[in-house]
Image 1 (cartoon, rainbow, N blue to C red):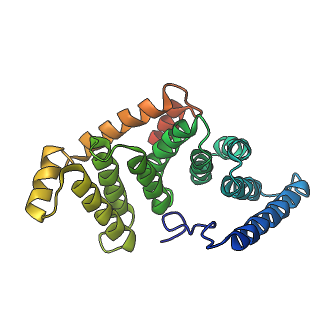
Image 2: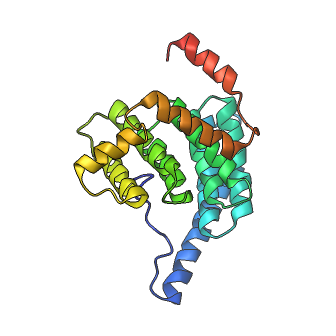
Length: 235
């Protein structure tokens, strides 16, 4: 665990000189990946093309170039979507969300839908749900729904003894405390029952409704086509 949930802050410098050095390092990395894109050929693996775009997008986010980051990430998303590389598509949505451009929440909605629908890296799915918690008022039920979904996903994909499952359980406890000042197990159990967090068919439906509100009928993917393919594949 750590690639998505424990990102280190690049701009954690204590003085202006260190900040300048970090910015120069970022610009150097930016040039490196821009050169990699320039030498790409038709034979370059599509995953490499997407990752190069995403690396540039992430660096541009750190350099506060939100629009540039969005544009690179959206290109990466298009390529990932067309090749059904859904984990990379979610990573692209993450960069778009972090760009803080006007449609950032729409990108988060896509990341959430794909991250719950497909069995991608569970840490990435949890990170997207953490974004939803962070973007919502602490007393809003959607925080509880997002945290519960995160714990549900980690329990299913990782097992109950996994570190990520422990993280998601702590995430739920934190949300419960902020949402309703829940601090003990009996109150937590009652809180879960009251909000129907013990019923996946209920909280997943509510999450779906929240995602629809983020996307506002402007989907960049064909959800019906994806659902049909998943049904055929038996996933």
